[in-house]
Image (cartoon, rainbow, N blue to C red; front, side, top):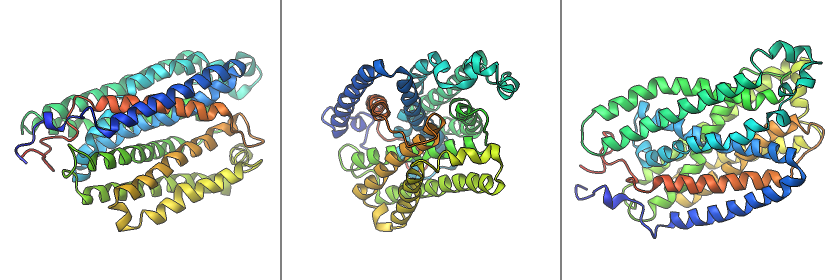
Length: 393
């Protein structure tokens, strides 16, 4: 093990991930072209589809940042296998901030509270205008992105410094920053979910809505990095350096986040449904009628029941191909879940699946995956001198 150097753990030019990168940017570019053409005829629909896609991929970036801090706090060999992947996902945040610009420019087409004619005739919107107004909304968004980007940059920088020696200072710094940073990220993610998603229906609110977005984002991150980790495990230079036990631990954690996501969602549903208050229950009625109920059943079955049953298998969690299959199903279901949460705000009467919905998430996703893999380049694919599981002895 001592013969391993940082140079020998770099992503090589012929690595399969580069083929994934080329395919993703090609497919993503084609999807973005569809968005540009179809969006000329339906600009409002394009903005709506773009918002859902942005929330999905922004959640992936923030999920990576959250899991990275959890790993620094708790330790564990599982984190060593995916730390570089989590760091790469977190470093996409500054680019995601640029992708927020179309949403900022199109607030009046997305949110009722950003339309003066609606606010003028709605006492509740007037009452909430101290918080829900365009300047304050944009200022909060800038603050969120600055905080997230600073945390991601600091953790990545100290992680690389840890590779240089067995000095415990970088590990201590990352742990201390993560302890406070995780609280800050949880708060800012909650408020971002309130601002960007829940305020689409300003007459309804739920205090657990932000927690649902946080749990779902962490699950999205796990479901995205596990297939990449599986590819790395089967090819040089990482092959043989990540054990089946570490892969199994990742599967166990993904199962835990599936259960956590289900718990948060069921808690909100149980409280609101049992309360049966008109101002609250209508939110669920819009998502359980007009065909949306079948989407809800699909989410219960394929987002919870199926992965829960499969991930109980010890053999499956130790098989990179099988675990990747479950993870990819969860990636798809994470987007469907977000679509079900958000789209009925505009289309409460019937199921709405537009071409732009698919084109936007695929286009942004192709760019995100390309950027994610690019962030892996030039850095060792595993942390070399992690105190829990050092690659270099």
